[in-house]
Image (cartoon, rainbow, N blue to C red; front, side, top):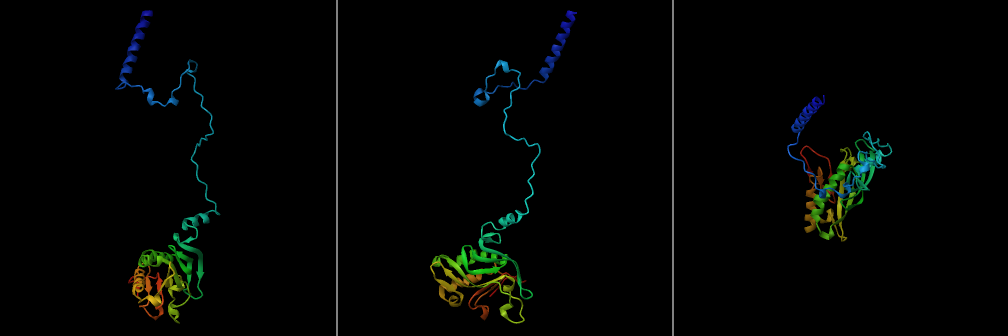
Length: 263
């Protein structure tokens, strides 16, 4: 019996060795050099702790077993959050930090066809103030800013230290074109137009449409400003258009089938 048991044990030992060779790795595993292990990882092992599960230190960590969903924004917070996205700079309007002013809201008209939806009162554009607030809509305010940046400022350049103020003759006014009886409602009556008559420079000097349109260097600058407004605005009128615009530029954002109307 003892001999048979020994033979059986030897048989199973051969089987285990064969299985081990079959699952053996293709190359020998090399131990990681001690210098590559952080010192804090290397700890001496005590014979008394062999086979004992290490104790996990207690921390204040909170285990989240499911993803947290953000809470719905309170109704009282929504208007303020929306306004901060629309007006990135305090005092700015139309979502553009370069257009300063105040939100007015809807302006009803006294006669049919007049009025402004979501009106603003613009006080300065790209650092150039207006002599008084322009009551207009945002598309007109943005067109004015485009012209100031790409037309007016480059035309004047460094002359007199640059432009400090635009003298506003008119913005919103509920009336017909040129105040003629029976005529169509003016773009001024829709908040889509501004009339500018002069430009005050930082050194105190000024250029006026009435006096300087044909006055040498100043006249050339005014003509360049008039020309560069054609594009940002749909209608551009000046001294060459008619007797009603001898002393100012009329800019509005009305568009026609033939494109921009410039005179």
